[in-house]
Image 1 (cartoon, rainbow, N blue to C red):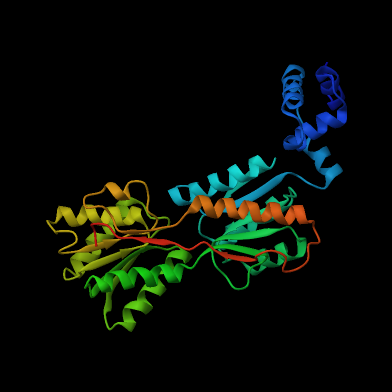
Image 2 (tube, rainbow, N blue to C red):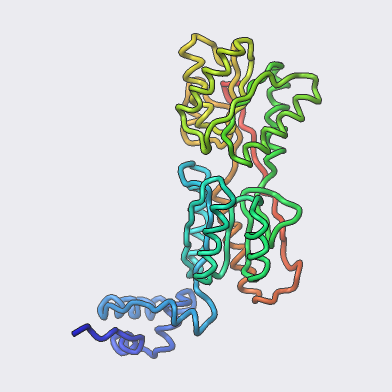
Length: 336
């Protein structure tokens, strides 16, 4: 015979408090006195109570779930974004539902439809490039949405991130200032990397320099792709004096290949990355790169959703900031 499910009333009796107090302790623990909260938590453990999220959601119209859709978690910057969002949401009593879609918008479309069937209280998407169907669906359903990592002047709802084109522009300006004029580009086939490349190329052209060659690898771009890409670029164009990479991981591969050829970095070849991964400061020479605060973007995205939810489903249009530019920092080290 199956065991009778433990109810909220059972927990209340074990804790010696009212069912309302138990409900508040489970849903809004920050509103409950620490001693009372400890008694409720002990009673939950003692009775083996499992909260019915569906029933709670039906009663409160809140699922306490926020969905975060990412292309990958294999990079440190996206992992930092996840951590930043998780920390902020957990503190507010929400849980994060994570979805990985790669770099194809049609995969995002399928996952978003599945996620919406779970009735999340909010959705965080990576970037601003979506299918028309995804965009229309999110507009129709009215769930608060943050497009993180990119800036766009026409967000679905809110956007928190930085300009990838400005990153490319800043990298080109830095390398040009250092005297480099013949550039190679090594990027992953990620739309955001493409935006950085576009900004780089525009800035280079304005100063009369040239992008001699470019090579595209499969996103997100692993270290071997960086080395093999450098082989192709340097074999075909040995007179390159700088290589701009769409990630630190690719740049590290370029650095290894350059050193295997006896090239001095940066005297013979400058190398520029993106992401400021935790190894970048410790390569030989240390890698010049661009630092983006992924944890801050995640935390701000989560807070934007929480603020919107606190304001109510029918918050006035334009209430709060709809677009937040988190910026970036160019880090000059020994590789340039």
